[in-house]
Amino acid sequence: MKITVAGTGYVGLTTGVCLAEIGHHVTCIDIQEEKISLLQAGLSPIYEPRLKPLLIKNLSSGRLDFTTNPQYAYSDAEIIFIAVGTPENDDGTANLDDVFAVARSIALNIENDVLICTKSTVPVGTNDRIKHLVHCEKPPNVHVEVASNPEFLREGSAIFDFFHGDRIVIGASHPQVAAVLEQIYLPLKIPIIKTDIRSAEMIKYVSNAFLATKISFINEIAFICEQVGANVEEVAYGVGQDKRIGHRFLRAGIGYGGSCFPKDTKALVQLSGNVKHKFELLEAVIKVNNRQQTIAVTKVKGAVGHLRGKKVALMGLSFKPNTDDVREAPSLTIIRELLEEGAVITAYDPVALTNAQLVLGDTIEYTTEIRVALTNAEIAIIATEWDEIVQLPLNTYVEYMKEAVIMDGRNCYPLEEVQKYPITYLSIGRPMIT
Ligand code: NAD
Image 1 (cartoon, helix red, strand yellow):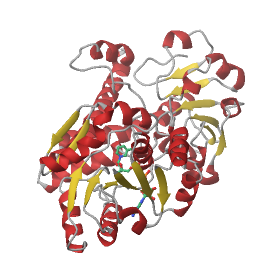
Image 2: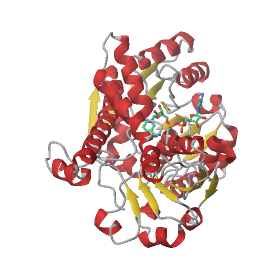
Image 3: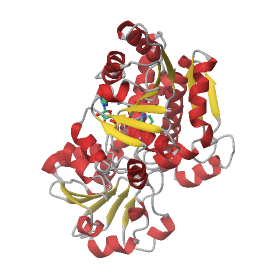
Image 4: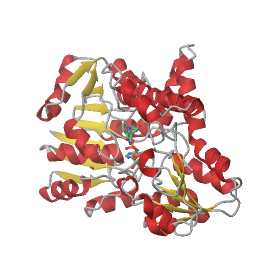
C-alpha cells in the first residue's frame, strides 16, 4: 500500500514509522520544514522510546520518506492518514483548522482514488465535514472515501502500543472501506472493532473521558482519606482487586495533564452542550483535576509557611514519564504558582528541558542532574514519576538538600521507607510524615 501520513507529531510519526516497519511504503508530510529536515537526516524531533532505531531502519530501507510537498505526498497515495493536532479553542471546543487544511490540500493534490482516514481526535461529525469539503474541491474523476481510525497510543510507549494495542477502531460507512483498513492492520493481530464513523469518533472521547474520571475519582478519595486518617494507596489496592474496577488509573496524584485528557474532556463537555445536555459528571472531573494541580503548593505552604526566596527542586517536568511532552503538564501549573509565591526553582528532567524552556523561558534554572537540583534546596516537589526519581535513594535528599522537605505529587515512596529518614514528607491521600 502507498500510504501518506499528514502530521509528524507523536501520533503521525509513530504511525508512519510503524506502518513502514510492517512493510508499507510511507510518506510523512508536515508543514514544519525544520522537523522534516531532521527526520530526513534520521533524527527524531520528539523523544519517544524505541522510535529512533525504527526511523533510521525504515528510512534506509527506502520504505519511509519525509516531505513538505503536498503534491508529492498526496497525488498518488492510496490511503492518507490525518494525524495533525486538534488543540482546544478558548471555549474548550476542538480546533479543527489543521485537519481541514489537510483535507483541502488533499483535495487540491489528489490524482488517484484515495481513502482518507482520520487518526486525529475529532468531534463527532468531523469526518462527514471532511468528506463534504474534499468532495467539493477534488477533481471530478477521482473517488474519495473517508474513515475514522482514532488513535489510542500512549506517549512514552507509543511504539509498543502500535504493535500491541488493546484494540483498533475502524469507523466506516461501507464494509468495503473498513476492509481496506483492516488489511493494513491484520498483521498486528490486534482485535479490530468495526463500527460506523460517528461511533468511532465517539469511542475515542469516551475512552479518554472515562480514564480522566477514574483519576479524578481517586483524587477525591485521596482528599477524604487525608481527612479521615486512611491511606489512599491501601484503599486503591483494596478497591482495584475487584476485577470490575481494576488497578489502572487509580493512582492518586497531582492530576492528569498532557495533550489529550485536558482538551478531550473539555471537547466532550462542549459536544454534549451542542445537544443541549449538561455533562455534569465530566465537568466535575475537570474541576477536580484543576484543583489537584494546585494541591502541591498549597500543601507545601501549609508545611513550611511562606515560599519567598525558598529554593525549590522541581523533580520532573514532562506530563508523565518517558516523554518530552510538557503540554498541560501539572509541573507547569506548580512552577507558575511557586514563582508567584517568590520561590527560586531549579527543575530536573531527563528529556523535557528544551520543551519546558520554550514555555517557561529563563524564569527558572534547568538541569538534567537530580543532584544539582537538590543541592541546597529547601523543598523538593516530585511532579513526574520518572524511574530516575522513583529509584532515587531517600538518603540523597537528606545528603544534598538544606532541609529535606519533600512534596511527593506522585506517591513514589512507601511511607515505611520514608519513616527511616529525617525527612518531612507530604504526599497525596496519605498521612504526612515529619
Ligand atoms: P502534535 O502536535 O505532536 O503533531 C501535530 C503535527 O501536525 C505537527 O508536527 C504539525 O506541524 C503538523 N501539522 C499541522 N498542520 C499540518 C498540515 N496542514 N499538514 C501537515 N502537517 C501539519 O500532535 P499529536 O500529539 O501527534 O496529536 C495528533 C492528534 O492525535 C491530535 O488530534 C491528538 O488529540 C490525537 N492523539 C494524540 C495522542 C498523543 O498521545 N499525543 C494520542 C492519541 C490521539
